[in-house]
Length: 154
Image 1 (tube, rainbow, N blue to C red):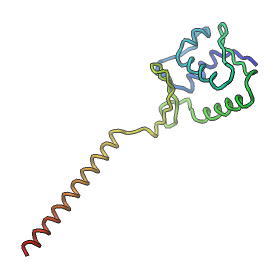
Image 2 (image 1 turned 135 degrees about the vertical axis):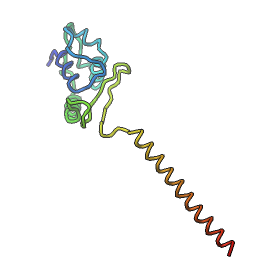
Image 3 (image 1 turned 180 degrees about the horizontal axis):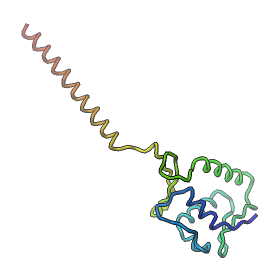
Image 4 (image 1 turned 30 degrees about the vertical axis):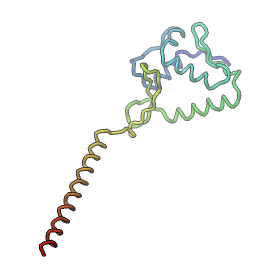
């Protein structure tokens, strides 16, 4: 089975994966679309899953040819699609996790808004904890030195 799907993949990619570039419409032909780093990333990583390349650029179309794939490879593809569909949402920067593609580094990163490291908050908590600990140690030291001086005077 071979299906031409350049614009379909382009549009779904942009629907579920945020881009740090403001990409909109699909280019007219596959060769222009494949010049985009995120399409190269998708193309290369999909083909790495299979013993033979199932995505091929042919003229003005990208062809998905699954006839040479094994049952295990197709099962992996379906399983990853299922996991990805349940992980991603098409509403970026809310409470749901999402993926973001960085064009400068050519990397796809998972963003989990509720699990971000809040540097200022944690630093404030550490500083306050250290100050409380120091003040507690000073108070204990003052109390023990006062008791010691009382014992020495008696």
